[in-house]
Image: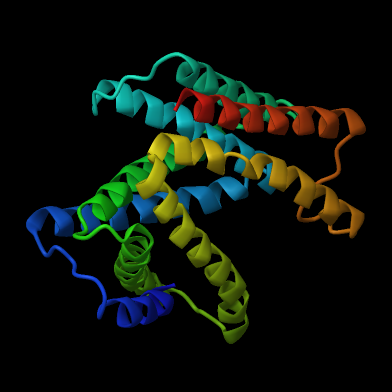
Length: 254
């Protein structure tokens, strides 16, 4: 992703101008720190929680962002927005109880992931809004390039303390491509509709994860997605649909 970031900077720099102020540099440093903590805790959580459940539980980040918006940013919610946040929370937590209880280690890493990801979301949105000009999508691409160039440069220092085989690097490429493209569109959505609503829409990946998990089981890849009963899959599907309902309510509130 560091390499992708450098390419992105090379392509966008002729068309954008970065505000090289202390505020922007501090925001960039905060993004690198929060993202490193978040990614580390997320990968540790994957050792404790299967992917489809963890992806849905990340919907709880909506609650963290709502609390921060109300208490620290003084941006109160109203009407259907509260209902949308509550509904998305119920959906995320309801998804949790479909595959057995979580252990303490998994809960701890999940909480740290939520806090770090929420911080990164708020910081990256502020970075985009500090970009001069009104070309939102182009500014979002440029900020993505700058953010992941810095993040990748810092994170790559860990490679000096571990053995990295060619096979490991090849395995990382598809993840890096998919995640980097996702970040471009996620940054753009935060800049366009705000962090909280963007995260409510992002929570629809709970439904996507349910469908992907089912496909993995059909393909016989039960090491990636453990088998559960039909009742659990029905409950997961219902909770994922509730996430979509929350998106609709928040959109109507806007």
